[in-house]
Image (tube, rainbow, N blue to C red; front, side, top):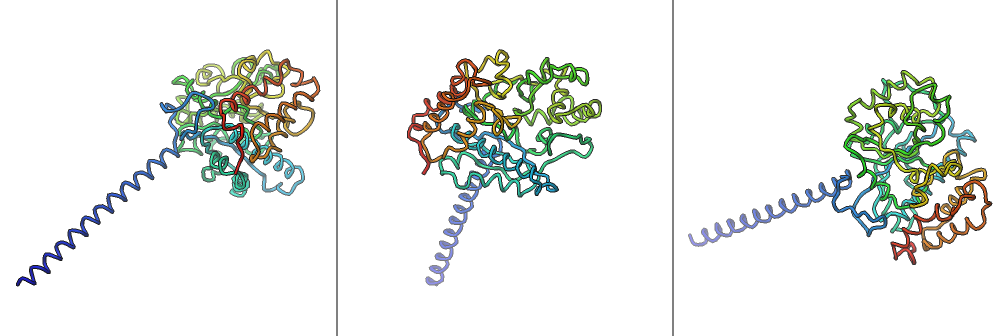
Length: 400
């Protein structure tokens, strides 16, 4: 009898232990899963009203995730064509410099959302950072591949390049994202990307996107006669700060507005998406657009019209736009030289070495074009110098 009770007691004790272990395991697993979900949510969506965001352009390392998007397309029917092949190589060079400049200047992590014509294109782009030093590699991460999207009920229009209207539909490609900054692939950062992200905080409750004026193209009477345009000078579509949530909930219906613009004026559009945007935000719709300073989309032609871009005197250029192939051909001083300096720069070298090379550019370029600007070196490099001065570790920073 005593032996039976002892065995029964042992069985009960073992059962109790198993129950405790099971409870502990289940609870730990739930906490672990909950932690993963919270981390995934943090990575997936950045809330603009983040109280922990530092206003300093070169703040210390932060967990804030900045979302940027680029669009890259290769026409498969022309992939072996010499011209198309050369164009794609140039675009890949520009994308690498874009990534490199963002990584050097940011104190945050940037997630690039690559929208492309094929998975092969996506792979080529994401492989750019594979051999980078770890300290820079961890700053540039990539979302999964997203294919170019064009709604079936919206007419296609002829354009100067493939996928030229793709950025218009990013709200529906990046459906789970609240906000993103779209940049053309021919852009180069000269100030921290987080300073650009800060501009979202300047949006009114109605504004859905931020863009920089064109300043020159749409002033021509030929454009004015053909379709209504935004303001006096139109817009440049190379940079767009996009509140995707607001765009999806646009009171005028974003997709319908695009369709109406194409239906009415499509035959007059030459620059595809840019013409559509200039038209959509014309007249009463201008209140939905945040007109940004030209320092965040500085193009070669603005050197001839600098009086229209006075903010660069105080702040310096933040984002250089090499449109019209000003990074790679002709005598687009100092655009071409700055691009080449970044392209040749090794991420394993100290950042001040890059600054030395860029300063030398302004010592040797001819006094014409952008090089003829008064205080040209200051205008182009002020932001970069300030950024590395505020980050003491950059003095001796090298990749490992």
